[in-house]
Image (spheres, rainbow, N blue to C red):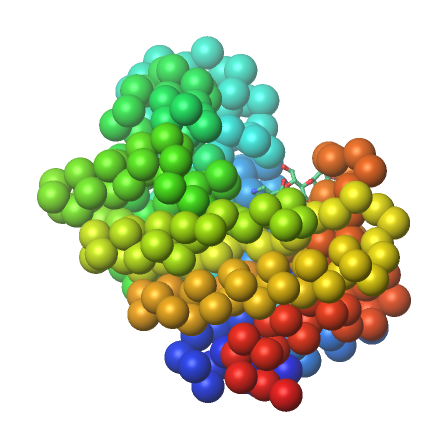
Length: 316
Ligand code: G3I
């Protein structure tokens, strides 16, 4: 690897990006992705709506393309994601299944999808975004139909399907110590005590400019102390657009801080930014008036934030 991936590797970490199949044909996109990153996460291609759009009918076209691109460029792959309330086809969310049927549907989905990629992925985000900000469980169809136990059941199915993938719980707004992160912490602690197979916690890290939690590193460390790996899995730092030099300097400092937080935690295995270029970030579509959250601008020029990361890794 070259670029940030190489700098991270020299420190025993990876530096990754979300990768979207539909942009890989754009040469600048692929050039930057392959130069800078030694890990990739499919942005949408391994989600339930893509992989099992109708019951028992599996489609791996997009995910396979990401995996083969990654293999050709020496990048490891984080699978994303097996069980999530969003991008979940309506045949699952509105199917009216009872608990035992929905459990079988979930286990069958995991066994097929994780089984298809068995041995090819570094990690899986097994369950994504299962908690509310107050620490209660999100009322997804899995939660309301099966109850709390669906998460442990999902991890067991994932371990059976792909014993070599690191199995992660992944969520947002858990980067600092708060009600939500403490609820996740308590679940992970219980899983370790009960022998539920969990290997890591992913902290999405969708940050707002100037609002990196001051206890980010301490929070990563408290999870690591439970005996799991930790990773920053979907990093971006959004600002009100248009960007200016002051905001870009703050963003650089924020990226420097979050990179150092991972570097300072032995069990923090790596960092993934949620996209290659500001041009294709999800942020402006969801947060009106916000954008410019990544390391490369719309023209694939590196931003001050790039230097913030590279300096943290000891680059020049
Ligand atoms: O594929 C269709 C296309 O056929 C259609 O023409 C087009 C019109 O809107 O939509 C396309 O689907 C979009 C899809 O991305 C692929 O581009 C969806 O509308 C859009 O909602 C979807 O957004 C994704 C979002 O997850 C959905 O929840 C983003 O790309 C993706 O970055 C985002 O990623 C999530 C993580 O998985 C979990 N954590 C939060 C993060 C940000 O929301």
